[in-house]
Amino acid sequence: MDERKSIKSYVIRKGRMSPAQQTAYRELKQKWVLPYGETLLDFESIFSSPEGVVLEIGFGMGDATHQIASENPGKAYLGVEVHKPGVGKLLDRIEKRGLTNIRIVEHDVCEVLRSMIPPSSLEGIHIFFPDPWPKKKHHKRRLIQEPFLTELAEHLKPGGYLYAATDWDDYAEQMLEVLSTNGLLENRYQDFADPQKWRPLTNFEQKGLKKSHRIHELYFVRK
Ligand SMILES: C[S@@+](CC[C@H](N)C(=O)[O-])C[C@H]1O[C@@H](n2cnc3c(N)ncnc32)[C@H](O)[C@@H]1O
Image (cartoon, helix red, strand yellow):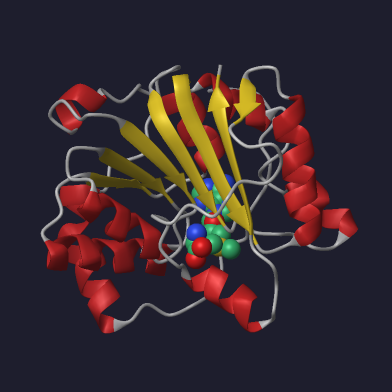
């Protein structure tokens, strides 16, 4: 067991599962959800020689996950989420769209990263609208901060990317600061990234836009 301190970046949200989510969770979990464990994943055999493996942290309802995966069938997508209805929803989407290049781990990503993901193995990391923890006393629960950020960077291949988006201005500034000062990463852009046209709209992004929040994107690459 790894004794490093983890960020408590989430609370398990209440929320009933819809009948479709329940059915998908019951019937498809065996097929697409990898059990949490302390053994490194063998991506080559799990995904049959993928062109690259992308980790998505906190996929929510899988809005972006299933669309990106269906547009990039040669690549593999590992989605990590603790919200059970979201896992049910993505399972339902995987089956309905006939996708074979997504796997899910239903567990805290801090532990998944340390125990299951080989170092320098990822082509990309997606973090779309991470929980903002807006109160100052809760900023310590934000996911994108050191030392976790360095752990994330160490799991990218050289040239691999970390792509994040948020609708919270002060979190965006904090991300830009910690990402820019991390010695393993370099910014693809001068400052915040241009919007990546291939990123689908997500549920939480929509909520932010309804409140007239600005969207900031960050795109960094491992040196
Ligand atoms: C604000 S939601 C955004 C969901 C989705 N990406 C979107 O844009 O709609 C953040 C998600 O991250 C998940 N999350 C937060 N911390 C996590 C952790 N340590 N491990 C796995 N998932 C986490 C939460 O359960 C939640 O569903």
